Length: 535
Image 1 (cartoon, rainbow, N blue to C red):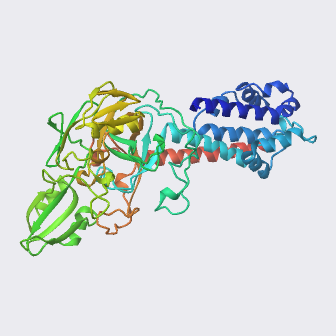
Image 2: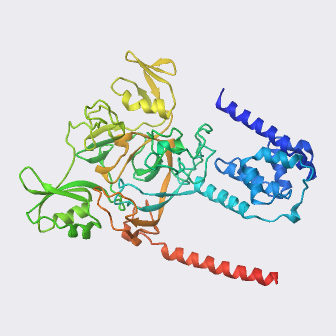
Image 3: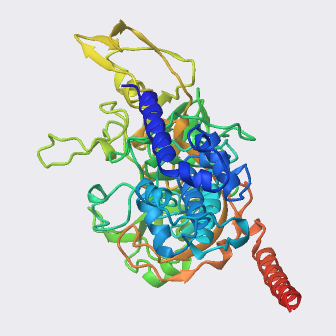
């Protein structure tokens, strides 16, 4: 049976049950019994019975928010029949049609009308959840930076607001879900998410739809997207969220030479608020560099020290900006400094076992067996919608995920020939645009070099604001050194993606304090005015 047919069957059964459990309640409210049977119209009449605006009907059909709004309406509905206790609310939420039938066929049930209605804590909380969920799902969503792949542009412990409006609102594809949870209910062992319960109903899905935004993704934008090769979740909008910089647009040619990125044959542009990092080897005199000196410069220690094959002091810094590398280079005890990168011929394949029989695809270079690594990569062209790809045994690893996983075709390879959806073919037409994402911490980033192209339907939005930044909140120092806990005030209430250096970005904290103070003053006088009026 087709998915749409399941939806229609579910809607039909639900509608019949609603009629069987509410028709007498409709009559007691002065309506006709048949009005509880007509789809959509019965919800409209229900809103009239509970004296709520007609446009609530629209919210009922919004993904994720709809079930919550339905709960608000149900709680409000039974209150009009003198069922106002917390227990009544719980019963109608968890045993909807059973409890409705009990009220419907009870001889003691009476319609109380609008004048006896009083707001309850539960209905107020539910409506607040509806409003917050609409904002969270369709407008702005908070995200936290837990990893160092975007250091130091975005720091571990940065809390961001991500706009879903810029590139267009993506309609949730899993419409039945608990609000505010990405994919798992955080109960049990957090180290084994595969054993946790999903926060959404995976069987109920909507097709990909996106409303028009006010601009397209531009090269070098910082973008939040769903991790394409998430092994735990196949629902696109429930895959783990990642944040990287979009360095390649559909049709662009990407290449890395000695770790340096070239786009369409030209060196990449470095944005003014981009703190790109690379790994360095620093050779010093016998005196070396004190840990205190490094911490004073970087904020915390991110290095390993030892001796090279010639017995000379060497420090390995995992991620330094050019600014910091230049400062370290000028230390009195430093002899030389060099960028560390993989050489040509070092294939970027990792294995899960010592015998090298099981490839770790997550940490291996895309596509497999390309002969590339994270520093010597490409050239590779990013597919765009409408491209006609000539399929060969040499390039199929590059397009297999697109054909099978992202564009949901059946692909078989038999004796060097390709069969898509049962038909032999040597070409494939790309159905959507793809993007190339990379972290600013170039040598320590799980990005498109490993998981490949990011489909357009995986795009969530772009970060616009850092509202909080805490160092030491996550155990994420590259070498396990505990970072000192502190609030980074200089990063808070500043915009992201503005191509303006951090020190020149506008600090909106004073504006926030003024607005917050204004709200409290307004709330104080408003309550005072109501008290005087009630006297």
